[in-house]
Length: 112
Length: 117
Image 1 (cartoon, each protein chain N blue to C red):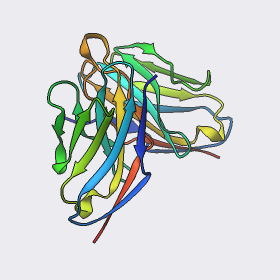
Image 2: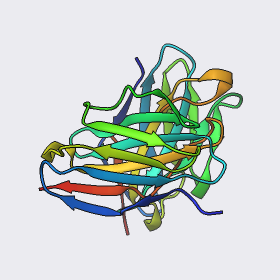
Image 3: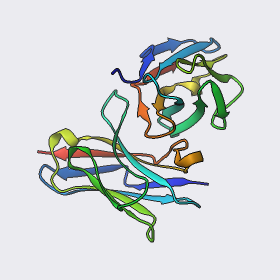
Image 4: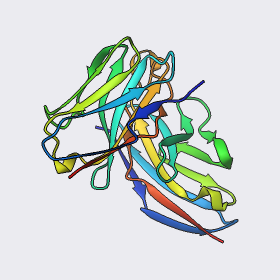
């Protein structure tokens, strides 16, 4: 079957605008993770979903960041009032019942 | 708190030479350990993982890693490098979650491997 897909692959936005990043996990995978990859900070965990619930939001860097998951499938990461330091590659991963995580290709976000 | 240290942000080897990428971890509980590879402009691909059992783990593309609890290490090796191995490699650790599941991954800073002809 298909792997994890993310859209858009690239997003350029102006400082202060809101953006939505989408993740389609592998079908049947109950766990979904968001990570951020930036030059300065490396790979950082953002949030974890089990089904539609997010038991671990500890990595979200500020209240401008939020995420939801619907139907135990698609997830959206929303960044409000984007700042230049939000520029990064946002990676999504999914796993079957918390086993091995499979990563998508990422969304490259550039905030001008 | 868990952490991962990868020694060497850049490693360069000749084609056919041994590849050794170092990873040390810190964890208060027995961890799960992983190596992922990232090719330019792509996501992360799992090379291998250690959960329980045999401490020498074999992965894809001829890579293997050995879990050494006494040294808190999980170094990645490959006997003979190929040009296609040039990529960035990330070591990661996670806690054991409920029912033996995997928690979120804590990554090292990555090691960029170059392979010279």
